[in-house]
Every structure is written in structure tokens, then in C-alpha cells.
Image 1 (cartoon, rainbow, N blue to C red):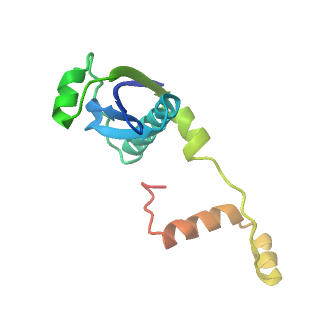
Image 2 (cartoon, helix red, strand yellow; image 1 turned 135 degrees about the vertical axis):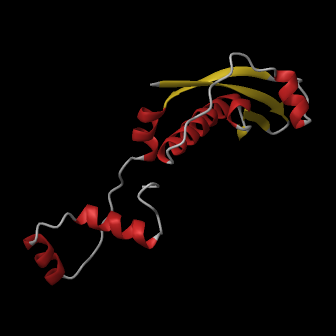
Image 3 (cartoon, rainbow, N blue to C red; image 1 turned 60 degrees about the vertical axis):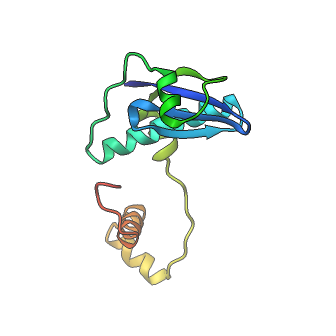
Length: 142
């Protein structure tokens, strides 16, 4: 499902700042406009992904964003600023960027490997569970 939120782009000396007023002024930036647009998609996807993971609902998107009001609130200039709608399929983006598996090579004693194979142990699952426990990640975060 496609999610769409308005983002305010403010031109600065070092590039662009991007603000999502509907999302509690969530922000990101980029050195170039292309980078700022890419970062805006990543920022929006990450925010919506973690809201969902935490069992929270995203606020509704506004029909219209008042760029001057946002600039005034942030006490920055509107010169060179514009509003653009950022869209992302959060589920697809997460599969590609947040939930992508990486291969790890590790060593264990041969006797431990043999015992685990005899019991049909899923090495990847055991390692993931052990790492989550070690890092104090809850099931909700996983």
C-alpha cells in the first residue's frame, strides 16, 4: 500500500532540509536535491515502518501544507522552499532495505555442529534469537 505525506524542502547553504509537518516535524536532509528526495523516502519509510512495528497508527496526511506557517514555526526562510508529496510502499521498502538478510560466516566446534545437526537445529534462527536476547530486543522490535 502506498503512503503519501507532504514534505517541505528548505534550501540551505549546505543543501536541503526536509520536514514532514504532519509527522511531528520529522526531518532529514541531503546535500543535493536528489539526495534530499532519496533521504525523504527513506525517512518516511523508516518512520512509518517503526510506527507499525510498535503497534501505533500513523497520523493522517493533511490535504494541504502551509509552507509559510511551517517556515515561521521553524524560524527559517521560505526563500527557495517548496512542498513535495513523498510516496513510499512501506512494506516493499522494508523488504528491500530494513529486513534484508545478510550472510554471516562463523566457526563452532565440530562436536557442537554435529550435535545440532542431529537435532535438526536451525542455525540462523538460533543465532538471531541469541543476538536479540543479547541486545535486549523485545519481540515487538524484532
